[in-house]
Image (spheres, rainbow, N blue to C red):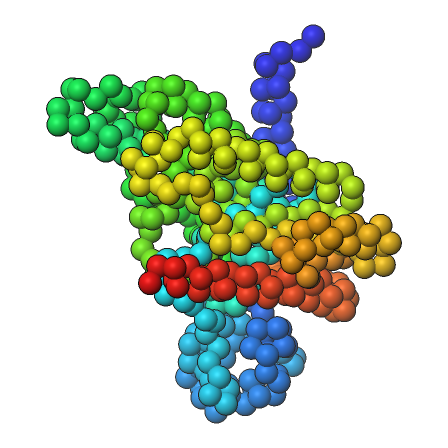
Length: 433
């Protein structure tokens, strides 16, 4: 017979092994570093200009970043910081290289589905990486206690109070005081104030909003990380709700993000857990756009169908049962997304079953299905195995065509994602005018 002590002992053994895994995954040592990018990559995949044209620009202006030249003098390599400086300073025939950024706060995109293995983290990671290479500033929020996105960004040591759980504790404290202050006499408030909450909640609640944000190995990507202990948030949130019944628990992350300066980030991408709970509901209520990855099999289709129904029911329950509470907190119900998109992952164009499933998705969901699926390639498989996205993988480690095919697959998916986000952004601005 085995009980919780056996699970804890297994966890202890696994934590020891994690160190060895990370050493073999992140090189050098345990610190992940972003690789440089060649002129071939920059010209073909980022700036969309001939390589010789870019070389001439660099030769004509020595004050521009010149990168590092290989010993044989055949190729130059640039850091992302240098690439972004080139974006700011270079024009090609009057064309600016900076991406379009509408006014207002960053757009928020939740990547969510409760079926495991459909590629939520792979999609979130690659969209964040592609956006960063496109010149955008990105904040990732890892809602998943498995913390795969956190680890893929090179973050290996995380305290649970620096995760979404900490954000929810902080929000509970702030909301408790706001609600108490709404009474002429705070003693008349039937709910506890922040100082009456458990001490651990108060200590976490004292954090500043920037304390939750960590830098990553990407200079223009930050992250609010997760960790295994963050799974406790589902139990803790239920406890906090019982302590303070007027707390709008589903609005914590949205309220937190409202504190960020509008110009701190351009896109905020959520990697959601494979479940519908307090964290995934917070992600849904904070998101402007909902992205739903799904594999090309029947079980993924079945699970995605269930996910849509259960998420819809959960959001309706909140709209029906918490209307007064939400209104008091300034939350507009029912929650409305600017767009909802379904993205096929692990797709093989030569597989008849995959094509049949794509047809089924399109027959049911129509234009809500992304036109560009994520194709299954060797580079995509390696992205999960080595916690390195296609964008992070050096094309010299495989055949250039294999790498190029994977990169182009993600680029097509990213460009469609970018169009979706910018269209939603414009719609939001029009609605606010």
